[in-house]
Image: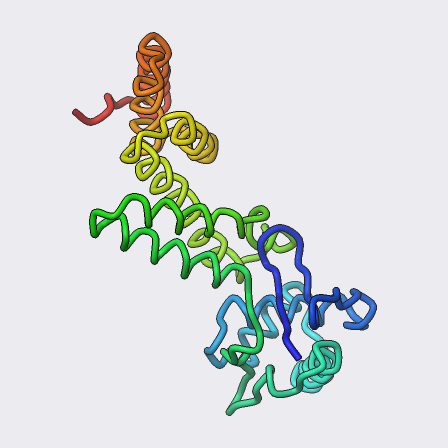
Length: 236
């Protein structure tokens, strides 16, 4: 039996390719518990941390007992009790290879692609970035966008996504695919309009595509925004 869990875009759990319905988890907090543990997969998360994440406004009278119930329901829904491990004072989501997590797959493929790019192999890097970006279905943990426990995990993944877009654009430029580079650079700029590296790739991709006027206009627009919002000039 194989479990796949998606944290990119909406939360989704699949068993042998079939979606596990939300009703199988019985309670909304069970799905939240799974997401909290997966954002720290392999680490034991203390009961205190889990209590704060699950009940930030009103803690139940017996949080430890409530947590045990949620863990039991999560194990039943996933169909593999070994995936959620009990430790001294907390719980952890196992790193068992039978459970695949899309965010982890994205990070691993993007890291391999970055390594290939650093090693001077843009074609292999391009294949790797394509593979990683195909996994990206949307922002991580959108259901938990305003939860404190999810902040660092979301920020890391969103940052890695922009870096993957930049890496893909850079690799595409190296293998003389300016049109594809332009699409990725433009998407990266859309995520952070003040990020110099993304803007530089956009300008270079426009120029490589033969749109010199567009490249100059993009640079001027970026420079003006940089000055207006930060009071600084772009770096040389």
